[in-house]
Picture 1: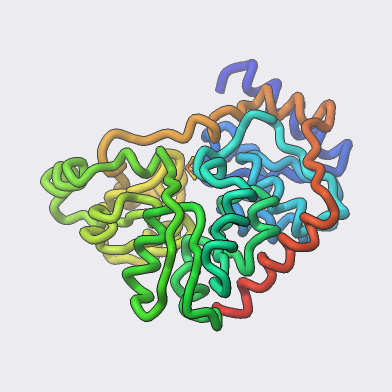
Picture 2: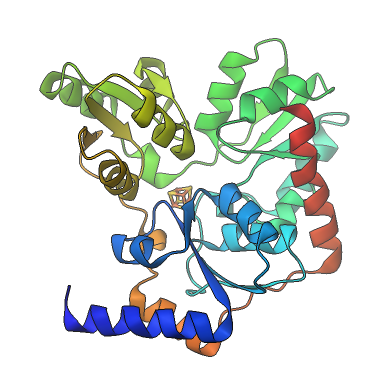
Length: 305
Ligand code: SF4
C-alpha cells in the first residue's frame, strides 16, 4: 500500500468516525473504494441499507441515479455523491418528457422502469424493477400492455420470458455491457470450455441466449458461491470480477472478452471520497413531490415479486 493511500485511508476512517458517516460503495467501484466501504452491493441493495441505518450522513460511492434512489428511500438523511459528474449514460437515455409522450401514445399501459433511471423518470412510472426481478414484476402487474424503460437488452429478456404481454421497449442501453460480443463469448468458451457463463441482462440479446445464467450482480455473487463449477466467465463490469475473485479465492473468474469498464463508476477515487467527507459535498436534493411519487413506484415493486 502506498503511503499516500495509507494516509488517505486513515484520514477517511477518522472523518467517518468524527462525523458519524457511513460509506456505501457499488460493486463496480475501484478496489480502493471497495476496500474502505462499510457496505458493498448493487444500487437497490445499498439504498435499502441506507434506509435502515441509524446514521444520518451517507456517502454513496456510485453514480447519480443510485444516490437519488437512496435519497428517495431515506429522504430524512443527507446523501452525498462524491463526484457530481458521475452519471449513468443508460439512465440518461430517457427524459421525463419522453415518458409522458409514451404514456399518451399508449393509454392504459403501465410504465415499468428499471432502477437505472433518474428520480424524475421513476416519479412518472407505475412501478420500478431491478435486473433480478424485472421478469416477475412485469408478469405480476395487472396491466396487459407495458412500457419498459430504459434498457433494450433487459427489455428483450423480459419480453422473451413474458410472451403473454405486449411490451413496448425503450431503446436505451448500457455502453459497458453492450460492448461484449458473441465473438468474445465464443473465444472465452474456447479458452475455458469447462467454465460457467454468467451474463448480466444488460448484455446483448445474443449473449443472453447463450449464457448459462442470466443474472444480476447480486445473482452472480450468489451463483459463484453455490455452483460446483471452478471457472466462470463473467459478462459484466470488470470490478465485479475483482469482488468475485476476492470472495471465492479457490475459484477462477474471467471477464467475457476484454475487461469492460464503466468510466463514471471509476471517477470516485480515495481523494474524491476524502473531499466528499471533509466538505460534505455533493448533497443530493430532490423535489418533495418527486420523492413521494418515485417512492411509491419503488415500494410497489415488492407487491409483485
Ligand atoms: S455500468 Fe452501465 S448501467 Fe451501470 S452505471 Fe455504468 S453505464 Fe450505467
